[in-house]
Amino acid sequence: MIRTAAVKPALAALGLLTLTAASERDPANPTCPARPDWGPADVMELTPRTIDGKRVLLAEGRIDASLPERLREAIEADDQISEIWLRSRGGNARAGNEAGRIIRSYRGMLTRIPEGWTCFSACNFMFMGGDRRHVDEGGVFMVHMFTHTNDRWKIDDAVIDGTEATTELIADIEQSSALLASEDNDFLIRMGISRKLLTEIMYQQQAIGRGDDPSTRYCLSEAEVREYNVMPIERKVP
Image 1 (tube, rainbow, N blue to C red):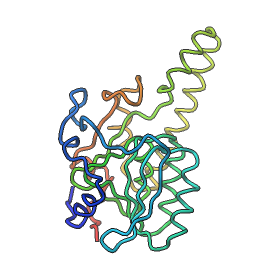
Image 2: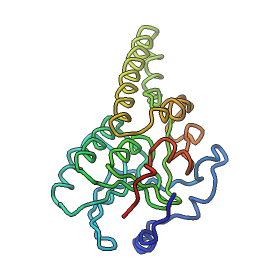
Image 3: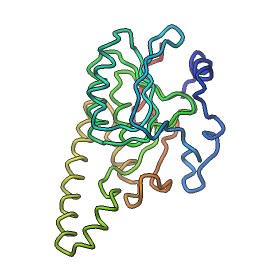
Image 4: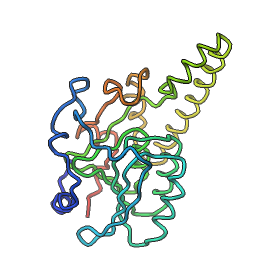
């Protein structure tokens, strides 16, 4: 991706780069870094900072149901915020979608994945809400199959309870996953992202396994970030 000279010194000063980890490939999935920097495991923190004369909102951590409301409050509290920098392992899928819609409601807002940072799972949809979007060189847009089957403990409990409970849970999972897939598709269309990102990338990844299983991940290449309009080609970072 296009390197922005001003970004690297600012990030280095904040101690936010993990370039060594980002350069090492994961043997279980060579498309991704061995040790992705997706920030803290705690609930996402929203921290306004002035970097190179711009007001930036650092969004770091796990996405939970409270995020959309907190995000709107943070942006409304500082009308000078023009960029949102993201690193997250994901979290609540619908909260990620809603956060993306909130970001899109602020015209001209830029979402950025800085060098060395990783935006994964529900974070993808939050990032795609940006009216302008930029993935720095060395930034990681990591995706996986969006499914509720990662809640393995629910399935295990249902199996213990018997066939009827298992059948009901599977039906619930299928219905919920179908609804989420429809919501994801609608979201991508509204945000100007190619629907092929879902069909050719996200829905082609392995669905079984835990979210922390490297084999279920896929990191978009520089060409794919542009091909699927995750980072629009025609728009430049000011």
